[in-house]
Length: 379
Ligand SMILES: [Zn+2]
Image 1 (cartoon, rainbow, N blue to C red):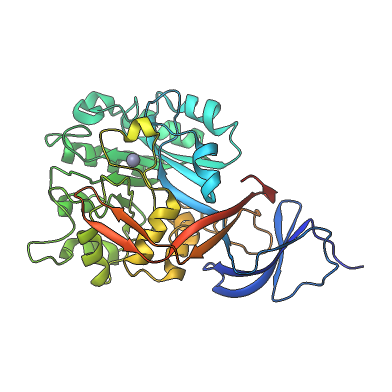
Image 2 (image 1 turned 180 degrees about the vertical axis):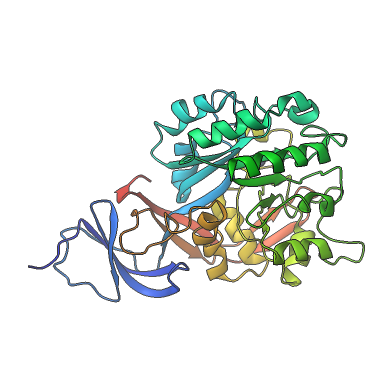
């Protein structure tokens, strides 16, 4: 008997870096899973066919740096209404909660969401409450490790902010990194460290990181950037990358400097992952001119010369890998959850102005068409 599918997306340009697929394909969904992917599926294989020719069909997007502890923190964005409408089906909260406040994020925000939501727990017990780590008493390695061990399915690692003012400040930058290392080793998890407006050289930061740990706000334009005095990516950053430290964008506009990103990319230093550092509009006020969606961040990096496949990979399979979830999502392999983003890459220009008023001119931009989550249309 002919296999029947709940839905077939027909004739789209499928880009799935996890399988090395780029080309015109039909994608079948059944019972919430990817059921088949082929150049042409039989015309009668499903009663529900959608013609998506001319559109991009990619795995549901993964944004590894966001803030969604809404209603508790003013900077928290409502995840379902902020992310699903731009094709993001998996978002990771980057340290809004600490071990003392994690239970609320888990039960009041993550549990009722239509999305797949994960989190880094802050090294600070109360979470991201500036200036959280200027008080070392906020750091309780054992409690933090216990918190992670109890919810390992949802918690992917520890977040800390090496920043001044706020975060660690200068005095506590190294002591907090040492505590983060101790805690992550105890919990067997990743560290994601914020380096925007770092009070110490980035070489001093990355020496505490192991392979798989993540530097976020890679292209920030304050003191202690990734470039040296001659405009070259610092040797210590290249060495960190070579030994497996990952570099994330964490855009938020305030943490993005267009000339620095352009120089790094020209030198072949591409970010592993693209992410937004998305917050509520209220959270964004006073710290950036405007906040970009993940599609706008993708359009920015495409314009900066990052190849299309690599842009998609940075928000799908590489993003899943970066948070230790390779093979669980961020891919359209048969049997995977049918989280799918249907997008259009249009010849519609846009200008993205960074925190210092420098612009990235994009000739082509990504636009949302449809989002599937577990095979259901959610946006
Ligand atoms: Zn953030």
